[in-house]
Image (tube, rainbow, N blue to C red):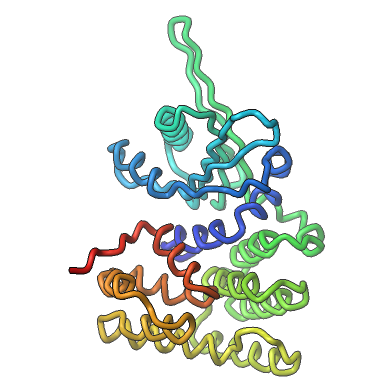
Length: 321
């Protein structure tokens, strides 16, 4: 698994949050009024984590949703993707749950997705009892490993996160067998087209698969050649392998040159002329963010997509004199 586990998950949750809830937490999904939309609270979450003074604590998403009850009740859904087994994890979940509730004076529902490799680690609550005082926080938890015996169910599901789970399971299974990983990466990529997903969904999931199931350079070339042949045979009306490779090559050149110029050019080709403040904001990004933006732009269709990405990653637009 690559160390940058945070960004690909955030990108998927930004685009498919309702599908995420429907797949992993269907009971909670059924109680939410999705017609009212959702509100991502990344900036507020950043303030909460800064105030906590607990070091680096990655909390994936904080989202405001409305329930179907009709009452003026706002539920804050705290979603965390935890990649490694962590001592005192339950206490950390409790701290964030409490701080979020206190900051917004609202009810909080906490959801945890565990992607570690330990079948026995199953944190689901935090609590203690002391001198007559009892405190308990029970939170919702799902674990990717629990889907190992549900492959047929995953194949039948049209939810994008079924593909995410399949990619994870095959990534774990093939970590010592690159050739077998190539087979499964090809199989899952072709599955994206067979499921009838729209262009935006296919590209987003392709990006996740390509990141999750990394291959040695020679096998990666085989993978791209095979997908290119597959797209040509199917006459797919989507972004072609050649376009993806061109964007990635342009990104790599831009990173080697130490600047964001080629990423900006790619955005202008795709979206049209950029606002000067947006250009300046992109030029000020560190290399890691430039790389993330260079991959994310594959899914952009309008200028709003770019602006949403900048906002979700807490990138302010500078004031121009």
